[in-house]
Image 1 (spheres, helix red, strand yellow):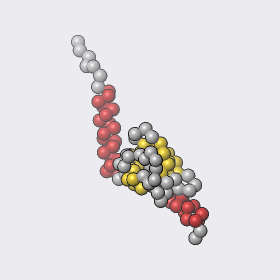
Image 2 (cartoon, one colour):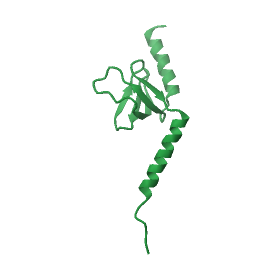
Image 3 (cartoon, one colour):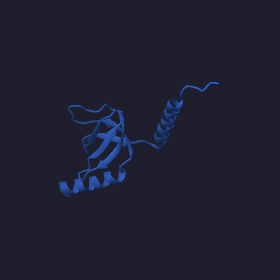
Length: 102
């Protein structure tokens, strides 16, 4: 198998494994002059034809994760449920305005 076939197969695998909307956690960035901190979570926006996984991270940055260079993982169903509870609780806190008094 040549390098092109290897990259094409990796891209197909990443597109299947990380569709847009998938939540991930960065384990470690490889050789990047301005890396995103380990443990930062994000949402996949796209996967290109060479397997780069593009994400919008929760810290406001957007970056492509290079196949074979950066390490990351999908969040587990339990972690996704925790995030939903946290988001719900945060929105409930924001909805609490001044109490109406008579």
